[in-house]
Image (cartoon, rainbow, N blue to C red; front, top):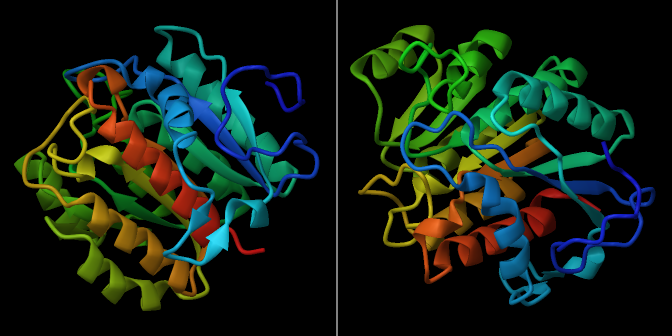
Length: 291
């Protein structure tokens, strides 16, 4: 578990040199041990960092500059290849340390199962937690082909942890019939196909709440993000996801942590997926971190 300044690998643009003084810890979760289709998201965090070097530090959307946000890129958590249970435990312990120090955890995946241990840690600190989930897939399975630890299961686990009425999913366009039935019967909120308008309707009801936001890059149509393990046609545009990020920034919710997952660079030789992801991370840093 590294929180010092000894890391010498790639870092997100304008990462500060000191962990101690940072308000935000940006970290990678390079795990893709349970994916159901195409592996490779373990390489996502570093490629997002590389793509960030092509960004401007200034956001014309938010009229803010990255120099206004004090964040430290801690690199990737060293995870044991092929061991999901131990990897998840290490992620939970890592995020617990970030929270103990009063810092904002901003994770980059990795497959979507990595969100589960993060929520465990965040919920320990914030027992009134709500989760905003932006994704193409419901991720509400109990198991996938007999495996309870699967990137198809994190939102079901989160519902069972914090209560389904505290979970809000947007952009969902893929899943088993049983997953959609669970969403309807359990009382969780699920918006199929669309993100921005239903999100704007929900945000006022979450005013003052502690909220964790998890974004799966495959909410985007493959035309905008082909570099992901389980691409799903019919998604939103990059512009629409930026609008959703900015809507959260303009709301009165208290974002206490976030992640962006499932970037799998090998499937996108154009690099547009990681380029988009790096911009989303920039806008999250500038919009959700209140100075």
